Image (cartoon, rainbow, N blue to C red; front, side):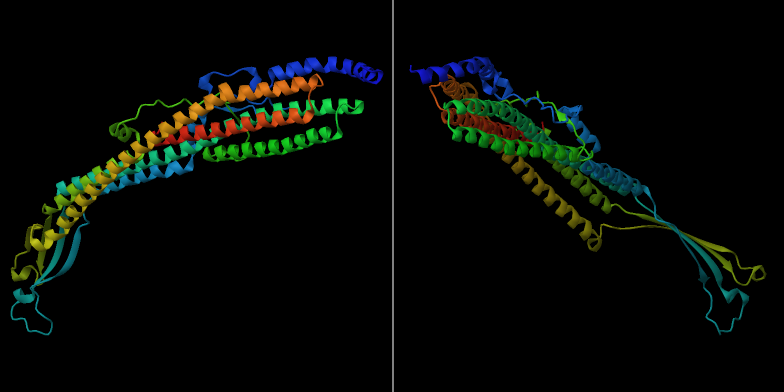
Length: 454
């Protein structure tokens, strides 16, 4: 070793001693070097600690709390209760009768300008009262039909609620992945800042080039852009969840970053099990029951209705004519079974029966399609889970070792900073690819739970 190199080495040695503990601590605790998490966690990235300049809200909303608030406060769910109440109110009207008819006129009165030979020929003044009496069986069938519409509306609420729950889960899980990305970016910032600091220290002693300093600085600026984009995406997810919960859009809150969605079991449900949990199938069942109640209401149209009429006649000639006061009491009944009257309700019955048959075929098709989709989803989820396990156990630890090796070589003056940055970029890209696949895995779980309404 010549004198010039000895002087350079002696000047660099105290700085290296001061930086080496920090390097060892950093490489021990950064990112994925902390050890693999439990397989059930579905990831290998820990969330970022909050930076001092970021204001953190105190309220933490677990996923269950978010879903409960959506169920209670989302305005899209409120019309269903009103429509169901309206259908029940309409059903009460089925018990009503038609208003009575009252009439005033003459009976057996001669035309004007005619000679009346006898006072008894002047005729009568008549008051008439008429009341239609509906068939109780018709009213009962109509009331049941109207009440069945309330059940259809109530089942429709479950369909909308399932969609809103799926949207909320997707936003919540995306936010979870973004928090993990924020943690990775924070650790990458510390790594790049350390690289730049080392390059700044080595450059005056001709142990590094100026391009290395600028390269590390450029990577820091790129990292700032990624952090800005991540924060903006988190803000969008927060606005989306606030909208679903019917809260002010910019009201801040935090999510439970320790939450992990449970992996679905690899057991394919039967069509009967699917039909018992899906709201759209239950709504179709309610529609079929409502149509059957409508058929019964139309069949009740074959029953007769009744009418009662009372007429009171008072003679115009008064009591002197010795004409008696008269009345007429008449009861009437309809005959709806005649061919020209029965065509209407018979056609309605036939049409409803065909509609029920079509809905049953549609229901069967929906069940078969859903079962096939669930089978595909289970396969995709299993495949993605295998890929994530490979990332957690093999890919990321191997690239972490490669980065550590390059960093140690750079510490011992056996490597160059570009090689360390390249190793870091490879590790960083792999981590980001892992997070992208983790987001896809969460989306698969959301789609699976939406199909089975879990």
